[in-house]
Length: 118
Image (cartoon, rainbow, N blue to C red; front, side, top):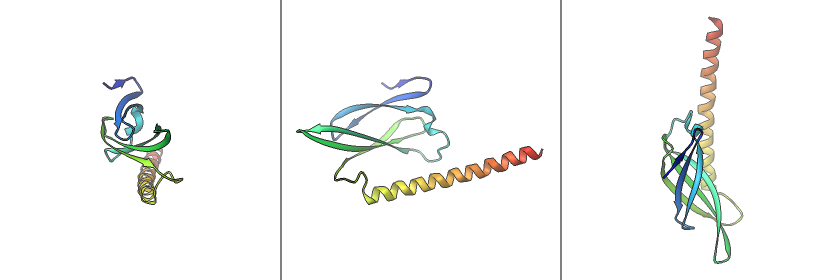
């Protein structure tokens, strides 16, 4: 069962690679200002398998109500944390979010200037 306090929600998910249930705390404010749901939330963790350290990247897809709708888990291989495809996907999402935020700032600036004139 998920735990809830005034600022965070504790969620649980199962990693299909390390076969472990993990607990994370999500800040309730992470949904504020988002226009697309579910959104990706990235977690890194590691575990030891047959004496070898394995590093994993987990992408949780979180909905507006902070429910985990899907998980993607991949082992990080080699020295690079992300593949070229992952970097392009993340960069695209960051540019889209930056564009949305710039639009929001421009709108808020216009609203503020309009209020100052009144």
